[in-house]
Image 1: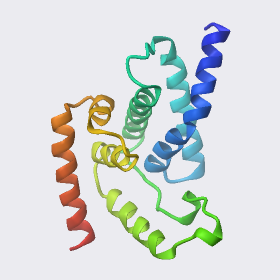
Image 2 (image 1 turned 30 degrees about the vertical axis):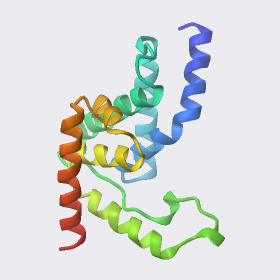
Image 3 (image 1 turned 90 degrees about the horizontal axis):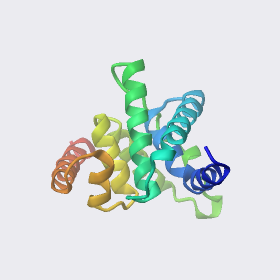
Image 4 (image 1 turned 90 degrees about the vertical axis):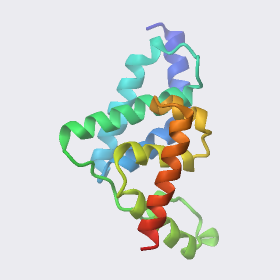
Length: 164
């Protein structure tokens, strides 16, 4: 790989590594597993980068590679995907700004999301990242209409889980 391509990849990775960390948090249950998955996603991005043509945004492409890597890797390891319990270390918020009520709501939401299947988790993750349905559809390899329908069904599931 040329040094220019390498520099471009490293820059893109540095600018967008938070999305990879978020995927890792969603699909791992320990710091070691998080680091392993981060490394595996980075390797897969690196291997695929020469074929990245820029038809979509780098983030859309990285979401697709990252989510596919996480889902594939953890399906191989276990029949059920392990996810971490939400806790305050996931939010680096200054004590002055910390809102315990909001934290409790977020914790409940993460517990509810953990009950969803792999694809539903990925869809919720991207929805909460304010991705539009066209980008979600492209990343997950489904139609935009299908993404909207799935998200509406997931919202219903989450309401049922959160308000039994």
